Image (spheres, rainbow, N blue to C red):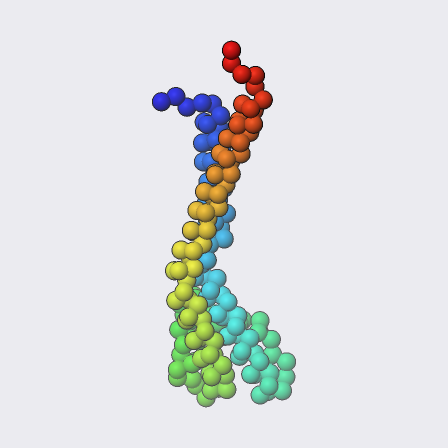
Length: 153
């Protein structure tokens, strides 16, 4: 089987485009760290809101994150779960709000594998669509070009 030079260029461009799609998809993939970061931010917002109301002073979520959320993500998740299930006297003020945030984010994290699967399928679709567009455009240009050539004698 003989492959023309144009077809070879198409294959090389498809591979390069595939590498670009993989790089972009890998960089933007849904990750557990992002979900946990959002979880901590929402929990800190809820805690800051309750503390601001109960103590009649301005409390910012950044201050709450700095003071309460320390260590690894697993330790912070464990701490938030502990606040929701068995809070100390001081934590009882905001444990109900933290429990709501925890429940919502457990659902988000449980949906992470399907979200990742959809992300990679979309990346595959982008690659396949680009390759089909490349080869379709090349075939169309060749078809038009062959239509203008004089007929063989």
